[in-house]
Length: 308
Image (cartoon, rainbow, N blue to C red; front, side, top):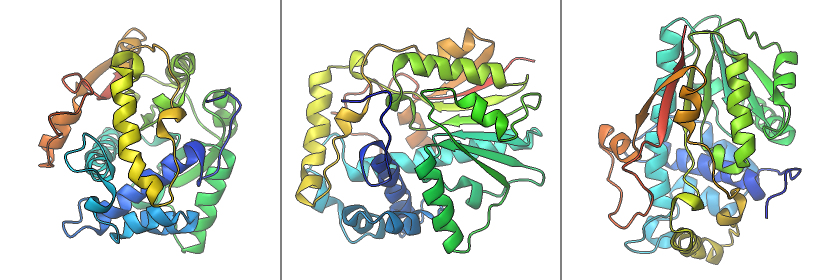
């Protein structure tokens, strides 16, 4: 079970999910279609050293090796959804900077390399917030690769369940400037009350015309939790056969939580939502299987703008 004081590296616990996501980005980059462009994903996964994820990232494993036929979810489905998700947040930053925004914050950045791979405009400052070990590992690994940030990149070691705004302000963040924020794959790893606090803090730190892009979390309270647990445990059973023992189901905080778009809109933001199914269709990616249980008729992704 989760604890509010737990921490992690990139090979276990919540940190291993960051490596799992990076492996999906690497596989999409290495695919024949080159579905996204993230040349740092594979080296980062290799540096963490989880053999199963290295084999998935490089294409050594096929989907039939790791996914049950006709399963509602699995590594291939996750990778396909990551392509759409990555493109969504990349485009968000492109649109935000096109309006003149020159300050961005990546909440729970994990092994995300946007500070190194996106074509940021001159004068751009990007803040990454995550656990101290995660940020240090990523910075050291990319430095060994000779990678250079494409913006003024500032690492902010902090736990998003606690008083992270103090660390962000100490890192040079300027609340008077409009900011582009993203929360990608984050909310399920926060207690419901910490999610609300985070949104309050973002609002308090945001100048008018700031923007925020989020991926919402569909928890057990939204679904038949027994069915969802079975889908996840079934999908990850084969992973364990390959030596990867990550209990994803146990990593999320349970309990009812606020609807993110409603919460933001009640605090001065204006949000536009996109369903995961629509995002896949927009990018000509395979649709979700019919037995997928999440309520994909509801938006999963929102872009919000703070009123001026």
